Length: 310
Image (tube, rainbow, N blue to C red):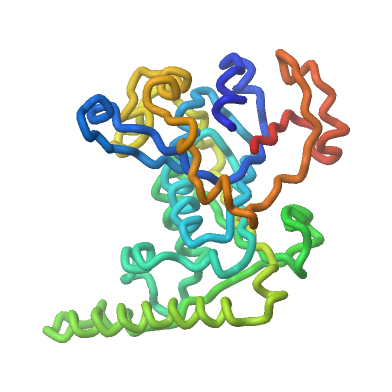
């Protein structure tokens, strides 16, 4: 488990790690207010963005996340962008294009921006910009693999191309020129068209050529220049549901001992999903300081510390 591996490192050592590859997963932790109560069943489910909050000092150049081909991965990606911390560049890899299409919630929250010249890339950039405090705008790029290949091949620049999904115009631009009573009808009609479009688009992709479904997709999010992205010890002021807010003052080992049931701590869909991707294997080694290890044979093109966490 990633937290077990990284929490063993001294803070000074952890801050020197520059690259991590991990699977996307959920961590289920009992609520501290209800776990001792009779019939207490309160439980929090944390995605990777909030799991990283337990690693203060994390200062990655690149975080590579291998996601499963499930609908909820869109929420994981959104959360990674909203609560961005501990990394400068995120590479979020999906097994196919079907999972890329956003949830109803994300669409509904951005009705006013959907005017016929709006892409998925624009939407992710808006989400990311809301969390980036730097005046230089962060960027989001979307890529699709040229052909079905083993999972992770999209990391090679020659194996991918830019992937753009243009969202159709549903008539929202008329709202800015009209204050009539019919405005709400336009919104309702536009929202219905949106939902129908998403349903039809997902159905089209799901029923399309199998080869197209197997072309992995990667979303690359890069922080604005000059932004301080180091993971901090303090809870985020606007994140009341974060692990640092709910389990304030506790280390990962204390949280694990008090509130985590090993049998159910990791999402069962993650543990038992036979389709879940395997991270390209890196050679493991034991060391005290990343600078003591020769990383050149692990990542020939990127000679900086990298951890692979299953």
